[in-house]
Image (tube, rainbow, N blue to C red; front, side, top):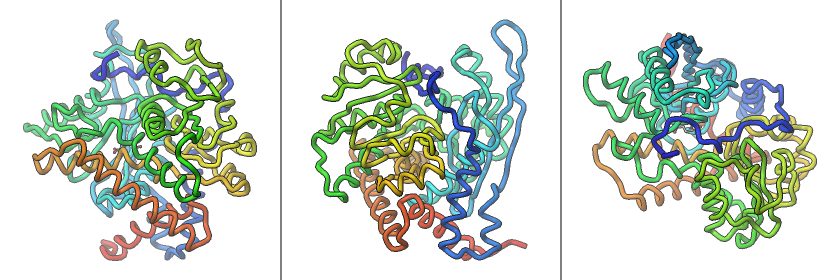
Length: 435
Ligand code: GLU
């Protein structure tokens, strides 16, 4: 599969049979953390009400002509959570598990994430309920174009800027950009990020989320005075985030002992031969057919004996059922919302250092911001500049989150939410309420 193939990589993490699919509602999960931080910030009641609700929720029917001549109507969403700090920013996912509540939660998380790393963006998210693995390229293109047209009023470089997310990639972003541009009657590159480099994408964007995970994990090890060399890492999810994080962490001297995809995981307590694993997955093969390591399940991976756990797949995988058995000293949340609020309490009791999603995986949207800036300026940076600027923002944000947490004797997640909500609230106060 080439990088321009719009179909999801076989390595995108989906639950396997033994994977516990929690019933938690992601919006409630997000809100319980929001409430905790808002209380500590003593947020005024009016602002509290405003920030608890998305600004706008769009539901569209997306009719698609299937290759066999029939028409199938899909449901798509775009939720704009908050735009006080700038244009709404957030990915589009194509997935059977998409629900309005999930998209609302993800749009909220984007708002807090952009504020944690201090980008001049608000938060949004989009999703279409579909299974792109069963669709042809042509069907995915027609779905993308019709969905884009359905939400076109909200889109624009100054209003709402999508990016890739679960099961979407740069090819899909190219179609969003083209559809929008055809309607506008001129080319608008800055309407999406995560585009192919040849049409206004940024160098380093594809690796940015995984690179950000590596940077904050390195900072956490430093903070805890733990050695980097030889640190044993287990990574759940081998898509764009997990595979890059594993690769970059091993290049830094950490030892990746386990990785997994939707089919299950592989484990070698002495460290996996990642180059060999990448050769295997490059042939579109799943990890459950990889013979040169021990086969484990996705749930076994989470509770392995390791130093750093990177959940880089889907929501709600660390729950009150398995949190007690986690042995890692550090959890770096590559995915959005991998830990339930109940599990958080257990992880805190165990003294596990959690790098929360809205910090840990903010590298992606940070380089999306760089891409948007480059598109608008029409001047493109080299990869070194992109990576250096990403490094600076991630390290600084890590320091700000941990300082906030320490100041309020809170865990890092609450610290991150407090930092973010405080920034969004400050802008609301300055702007006042248009009544
Ligand atoms: N989908 C990514 C995320 O959840 C990137 C969003 C973006 O770059 O706008 O952070």
